[in-house]
Image (cartoon, rainbow, N blue to C red; front, side, top):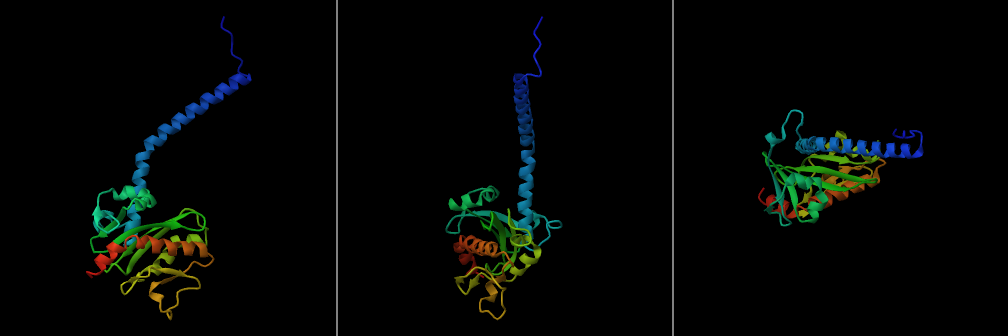
Amino acid sequence: MAKKFNVDSNVYIILYSVVMVVVVAALLAVVSLSLQGRQNDNALNEKKQQIVTALGEDPLTTDYDSIVAEAVMLDASGNPTEGDVFAALQDLKGSIAAGKFPVFKAKNGCVVIPVYGAGLWDAIWGYVALEPDMNTVKGIVLDHKGETPGLGAEIATPAHQAKYVGKTVFEGDDFVSITLKKGGANPADANYAHEVDAITGGTKTSDGVTEMIRSGLGNYLPYLKANKSNN
């Protein structure tokens, strides 16, 4: 007669636990793989919606393909080069470090430039849309991973993002970008055209956004200047 295994023994409990962990891990891996395609599609769709929003349109009523003419990868000189634009957005920092810069050209002549940076607690990122003059902000989308609710997280609100519309990033031929000004942008200030109200109580996040826009658009200066001279 076969000897019964003592289900109350420590050995049985350990073996049972190990088997259950392996089975559950395997099931989770299968589920993860089966959902990966859908997750990638959702991430791609979210990026497209943010690009549409930056162009001043409602992504619920305006389709990406109906407003964007082409997505192009540029080299450091601002010339078209090979590369998967949306794959680059998955690792924008790495793509830019490799000298590849994605840009989205709208059918109305506007362009959308993706930017990334660091806030107070974690990563921040966004999309800056410029009018065909390559100078005037058409719109902007900003987002974050972990800024403080009610403070730095305000950069992701429509009310804050609306303040960038109409601001300019060049003063004549000089690139000046946009500054989030502590205390608020003052119409009497000579630099008012390039200033936006900083987030109250969110100084570090505001500084991060200022640097992100400056460095992000700065990566595209050869392209912007070349096309700005034609407008």
